[in-house]
Image (cartoon, rainbow, N blue to C red):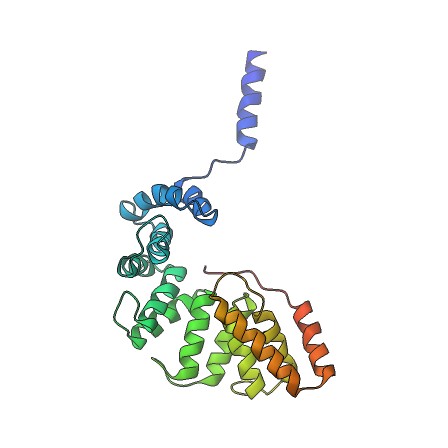
Length: 239
């Protein structure tokens, strides 16, 4: 009987899910906005273990001033540590900082370098960033077709800024064939606040949608609305 009980306990233990480690618990705390707990769990992993995901999150906590003092310079340092290990999210955010000159000197070439790394790994923020740089010729040659391709990848993952830009390219016919239905669709999707950007992005998308609606037929508006309702995001990668 004792052997049977012991065996049952072993089998029961094997059936139970393994407990999450400090990294998973720290990321869960971050996502739950329990920032002090996130710092407690992630900081040792970032500092002592050199864990890239923990380093990226510590960078973001410094960047946002959540759980740690707001410090763009320290955020950039942590993003760099993680990005040098190939972390796509850190590369994307470091690219943004170099593009904006936030926490580091403004350097479009460095911005393009880190955006391209993050974009190549499927990060939607990096894809949108290199798309804008390709459209503007900042740090990389002007290439509307390349910009449209990057925006399409990023918008497909639900990035509102990329959706807005893609809508503009379809409306103007730059890098893609002119298509007002597609333009309306992307403007409509970009106007839905996903919490990733400042409110201005969603407001601009709504204005672009409404202004375009005045220029096109009711049938085109309705088709654009149907296309927006049918749209489903692909799985986010490299975040």
